[in-house]
Image 1: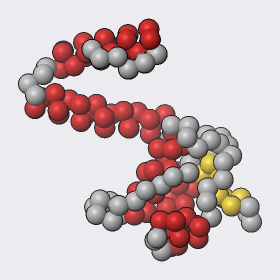
Image 2 (image 1 turned 180 degrees about the horizontal axis):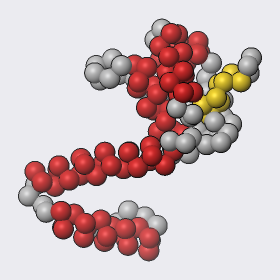
Image 3 (image 1 turned 180 degrees about the vertical axis):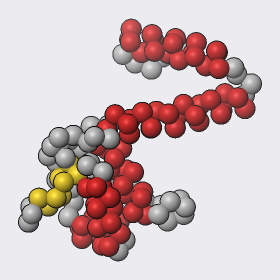
Length: 133
């Protein structure tokens, strides 16, 4: 599991950890039952205070993304995150927002963006790749 933090991000470090673990769980890059690194190990990897990682893990547990097993560690929830679909939709929504803002700045209308998305989707389904429009 690879987590990257940025002190200059403006987002609290514990929240960066929470968001990245949620993303990893929602995208399937960490699977139910997979163990997260112990608090001290992750804190050493990220060069942060262990209390910061502990707070992130508590937030993730409260959200149902992970579960603590006594003396065994912290694991991705076996039941799957109740937030998984909501998190995936949130991620895509943020990207759509960025796409629409960029299109607006370039003078491209929503209709053209939707049409382009349709063409790209067809191209990806027919070839399984990323062709140019």
